[in-house]
Length: 285
Image (cartoon, rainbow, N blue to C red; front, side, top):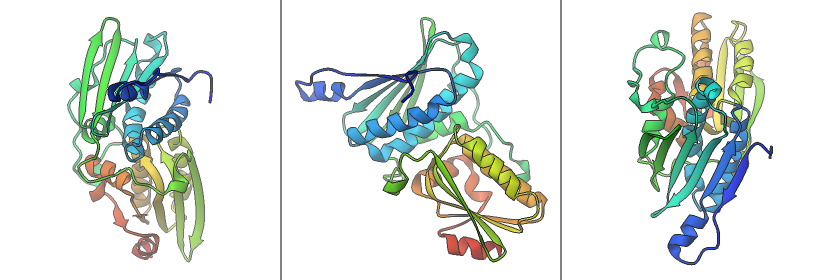
């Protein structure tokens, strides 16, 4: 792990409360997008150690949104690392606190974006904080002296169930792309995390596949651990380009964490979605 991401842990547990406090960690990150990949790995490790592995995907989505916003829009105003504190809560939940010394900014003060409308009407951004507010069970902001402090709470189970369940062999994978041809259909399989760090690579591939030469494209999401708004943007680009070229696109095998993000963002109505790869291929033939 890069030295720019530092971790502090608690001390000797004596009581149940002490043991819970002992599992709290503070991560310090440099203001670089590349740090978010290492943060995701640290969150996965911490959640697994605390028995909260099923919450890791949604915590990672929220942190990707919050920290990418700080790095891109508030980085020049801060001189110290961004701090992320993770702590388990009673009943099997988690409390996440993000602190930075950038200019005062309350992300909760902005109105929520409109998430309905047709594919042609949908813009490519603006979903990040909406996702955070929707997939977390509590979000609050305070300006504490010269620091911004955003506090996120995640209860033991998301309302649609244990949404963090993903195939074990995929956990911790940044992103692997597999491309193959089935008849006249191209299948692009995504394995890993589709977030701020991996979205540029996926976008380059998607643009190459949506130039009109591919008549049918299936994006297999069965290996996705989670998708953040940066990943949603890439998928929206793919859909718009395929529509403009008069070609067909379908998505396959949305896991629960990905489906939860699609539901919040209004993406379920924008795509042809099938439960498995074969039926998705059939939908574009």
